[in-house]
Amino acid sequence: MFEKPFYNFLYSLFLVGITAAISSYFNGIGMESFYGNLQLSAINPPDYVFPFVWLFLYVLLIISFDMILNHSDKAAIRPAAQMFTMNMFLQVLWCYVFFANGYFLVGFAILVVLNFVNMFMMRMFYRLNKTAMWLLVPYQLWLLFAAYLNWAVVDLNGVMYNF
Image (cartoon, rainbow, N blue to C red; front, top):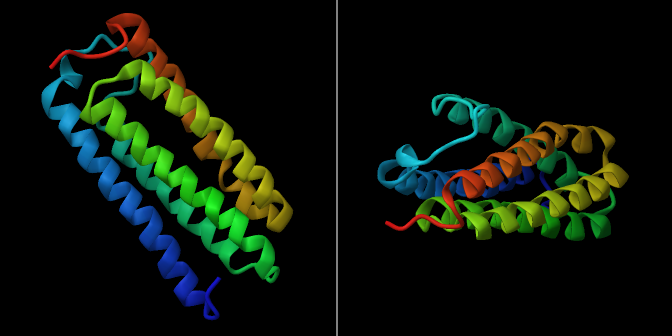
C-alpha cells in the first residue's frame, strides 16, 4: 500500500486503533446503562476478561494486516485491505447496535455477517500470506463465541432492551 513498511504499520495501527476506540466508547454506553441488568449465558466470561482478550486480538489484527499491506503483489492488497476495512466497520456497527442501542437480534445478525466476512477475509489473506491468515484464527474463534453470547442474550432477554 505505502512505499515504506513503517507507514503500513502506522496505517494498520490507526485503523485497528480507531476501531478499538469507537467500539470501546459504544461498549461503555451499554455497560453503564443496561448490560449489568441482562441475563447472560452461564459461560459468559467476567467483564474484566474482555479488555484483555480484545487487546490480544487487536494486536494480532494489527500484525496480520501489516503483513498483508507489505505484500509484494500490490494489486492483490487493495481487495484484501477493503475486506479488512469492512470487517472493522462491522465490528464497530455491532458495538453500536448491541451496546449503544440494545438491539440484540440485529446485533446477532451483524455478528453472523461479520463471521462470514472474516472467513472470506481469512481466505484472501491465506493467498497472500499464510501467517497473516493464521493470526486471524483467534479472532475468528472469538467472533463465533461472541455470536453465541449474543444469541444467549436474545434468548434470555428478548430481541431488544427497552431503556
